[in-house]
Length: 156
Length: 156
DNA sequence: TTTGGTGCAAAGGCTTTGCACAGTT
DNA sequence: AACTGTGCAAAGCCTTTGCACCAAA
Image (cartoon, rainbow over all chains, first blue to last red):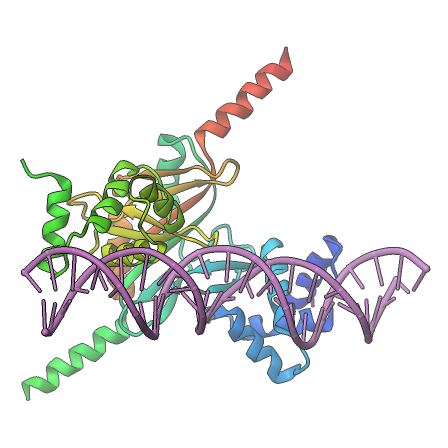
């Protein structure tokens, strides 16, 4: 059976790039942290744990390459650093994010919420959509829960 | 009749800030370029035309202040610079953007397209939405038109 | 005179780039 | 040998900050 990393390897090859040990180590870190939204520095530190000789510049170059090949998406939550998010294989659309303004947590929404909205935009604005970014900023369920518990305690 | 700048002045005052000449010059530039999505540098150069003695740091500080007061929104289209966008007065929601990957133009959508989507997110993810960012990347109507015209010409 | 605001230059943080070297083909 | 990729350090770019000075209350 073909693994995820094999498929990424093929993608690289078909664009005339090699899956070098450094690139493989970087991709593995991304696969192991699919839920997270790692910055280049984050990725670098994690890769370094297993491949201490890697340089930060190589990580940047690899992430740029993977972005170009659409293996990852480069996203920006407005905090000054770029974050890299592995694309879901075969996903027709880019997933959405919920950023908690209280605790900073970032949750992902895989559902396609924008189907109808995109139809409207394409029709009414004559705009051919290729990609989208949707991020909600607010209070996550964990912080809700925390403040509910606090209210409970205050009562007693 | 109360002007837009008067209302912004009041907003500043109620947060114990003054509308200094530099701040006023900056706000005026933003008002005169409401359609655009200016970077701090852009704003600085435009302000400098009328108030040559202003410093870049002051522009940054003013833009930060206006962002804090929610007079402007700081947005980021992933090109490495922050852009500043005057909020529509009384707008319940932040408008959306169409970024053309061909010509780089940025159009705004003022319509509230996310009402239904937000209800779903709040209910299904128990997430209290405070703000959102929605950007579509694709081909704008102008570039569509251009390529249509080209096709027409090719036929002849 | 106290406080908030400004301009300038320096520092900061993230990212990119130049260059010599290593690894493959 | 030719080429791609790498590590390191330096440079780049946007943004923030320290500090002396200015202006208003």
